Length: 287
Image (cartoon, rainbow, N blue to C red; front, side, top):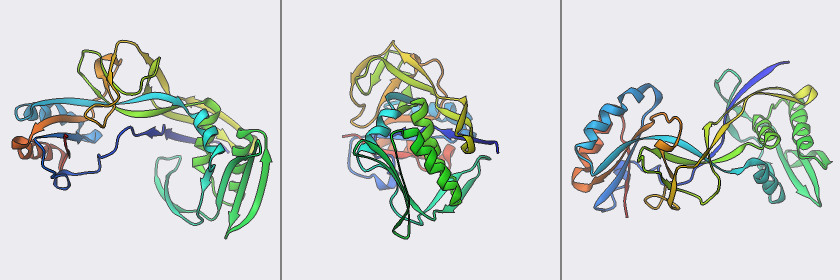
């Protein structure tokens, strides 16, 4: 049976703190960072919103998303196998998956599984109600993933997360760290000190796969480029974020508005962005 599946490459977010909304971040500060993420259907309003925000903010810009390809997935998967392993620790957890038609579905898992390395071998283990019902040992990581996919089908679970792990391992996909792409146009870069610095231009993964004969046909894999015309200023921007100059990238889609705002103008900026977004932007005090 031919199946198509579309994945978006897993991004390891480089910073935390974006969960705070305006009213939840009222620590006293002189300046605030305001971040407004515009959904695709509102992207056409970014420039208009930015022009209004610039009149009130100390500094404001549009931003895009950039994925910094800092590591490779094969090394990370091998590291995970050496530690606890890869798997589901509890039976019957509810989760939401996206099927091959792009529809979100809630499923109930009927078994727990774990793949891990022990005494130089890769072990595949499946449990139901706390009892081991399948155990398999191999020297090959890909064989372990395929074996789990085959057993999963027998137990009526396609295990899409294991399929993606297999793709990551087989093609050694980049592990990316999320960064703001901001048009400083002066070569500014805040992030890990890695050389060469690579960025993912299109992180989507599309494959055709056949579990019955253990075949994967890649239709699209992530595209990366080497960024050469930037200068590393520091590890993080404003104590939290990775940033790369959008002018150093071949193409960046605008995703939102980012601004540094004095507390006296904060309410005005929040109201402007709320008018365009229909909801509050993220507001964080700058220490």
